[in-house]
Length: 460
View 1 (cartoon, one colour):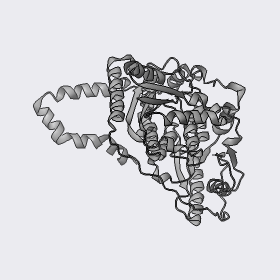
View 2 (tube, rainbow, N blue to C red; view 1 turned 60 degrees about the horizontal axis):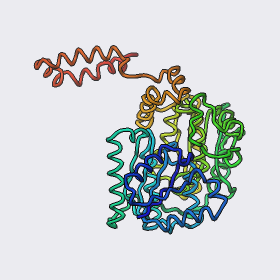
View 3 (spheres, rainbow, N blue to C red; view 1 turned 180 degrees about the vertical axis):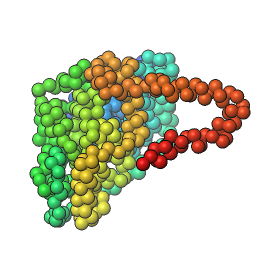
């Protein structure tokens, strides 16, 4: 059988992801696996209709499609995202309909689930027969157990195609409305309290709900608010995955475009950062994805600590919890405060006006008190994953991260908490005595757990 492998790595064949594909090719040489470079050639695919149609031709002639990509910032790389948009823009979804499909990604498992949810949903939207995914750690191929799992995944995929196995959808279709937001003039202007408020948008048309919400929101403040359109920022391309920035946080693009200067001079100094975008497929635009991917020149170190972050979204965000989780996680991973979301989903212009007004007041109030909500697992889990990886196998090549982690005290390994270790050791010894174990677990555990907290509560 023929499988079209859509390579999402910006590095083309010189990528970790493709080594997994090559291993499958070697083990299943009876099948033709046609590798089509997508991200590496996205500029040509965008500009050259023949290049795009050649890809569609490969899809049409294939028995199955394998989406293969490295994980970039919660999702697929921006170049891959742009290809998915092109398929919709050029009405080419029918080429994918009823094709058996699976997903293969490589990463360190940082939010690999959100990337796979996204791809699964895209496949469902396009009427593909989704078989499953293989989320590989970058080094899994080095281990026999990892190779065995990869072989089993490939076997399952090939067997499903051969046997015409039944599949089911995991994601409901997303439905949109034709509602046109008509804002009223802002009656009460908000005192910005000298806070630097920056709105970043990708609105490319002044007559869209997004552009009108951004304009209405900016007018709620008594002072000028800076609105920056990503389409006006000099961004030559997406992240190339070269990791050159790992040494000293200097992007390989350097001064060939204006992204680093834009991020350093506009994004970082903001006290309040509002990101505004329109949902395209099940994410924001590829332009927004390029913003997030390119910001990786900062490495794994939070660069927006203590800031207020909010989102203005045009489109059915409530129907895409995966996207909401990505946006929530971004704010938390940055050690910023997520002040909330405003969308146009209500279909009520007056209500959206009130939401935008309250949103602005909340952002300024939180900024004034420097409030940052406690992190959830979205941040804690990610932070520990980064901490352990940078301490270990990623210290090289991410030297800049390692230096910053030491400076910021992020190497807070549990084994350094000597007092807790001593107490735990003593208690473990005591629990080996039956009478003490009964006393501790049946009579004293609950009261002892709250005793130190009670002292704080009782303090005047």
